[in-house]
Image (cartoon, rainbow, N blue to C red; front, side, top):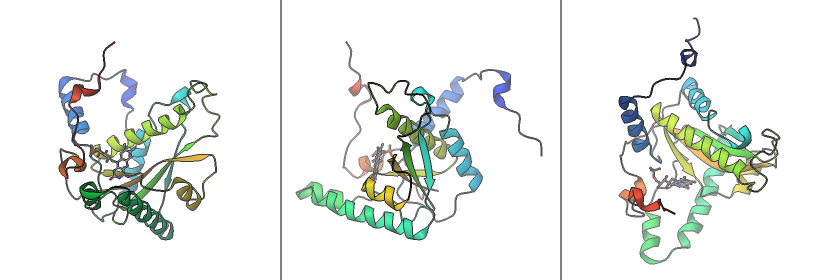
Length: 221
Ligand SMILES: Cc1cc2nc3c(=O)[nH]c(=O)nc-3n(C[C@H](O)[C@H](O)[C@H](O)COP(=O)(O)O)c2cc1C
């Protein structure tokens, strides 16, 4: 079969009002997902989303993101156990009503998600030749975050849900996954088809944290 034509050959596309409306839908309907269906994710869909994530911006064009698919059942179980330990400790750091509220939240879908992706930032990469990192070295990790967000949106556009799990001990996860020491854990992602679709975040729905008004974080000088 011949390759599909490259859309970039015809010059820059026109993003019209209809496209912007659909893009708005994508942003509004991207969710952090913790309830997954068990059916597997097709390899080509996962690859397409990873391909789009790789178009993310990065400091000095360093592209420091490293995606690790965790398929080994023993490793997945160990990550889940680490989450349960860290989640219990986090719960116990709250008191009274907030603690009860926390205990009622579902904060990961590690057991159900067909795909686990650990995302690391390669702190030893020479790509980018240090540009943009001299005074703000954290930019390398921020670049990996940009790729995670791109993956999140791409996945949503392909009918997949993504749940970001950060209630983990990063050093333990890094050891468990046997990756180079210079790789820092940035995100642990559960990926699969969502059981439910919602226009509002789960933490809003369950009374943990409301959304701020859109203008709340714009300051003028
Ligand atoms: C850096 C980062 C870490 C997160 N870690 C967790 C987590 O450990 N568990 C969880 O349930 N949600 C986690 N989330 C998802 C947020 O709770 C979620 O994005 C937020 O409540 C807004 O909901 P929405 O993504 O559905 O819009 C994380 C999100 C980000 C950006």
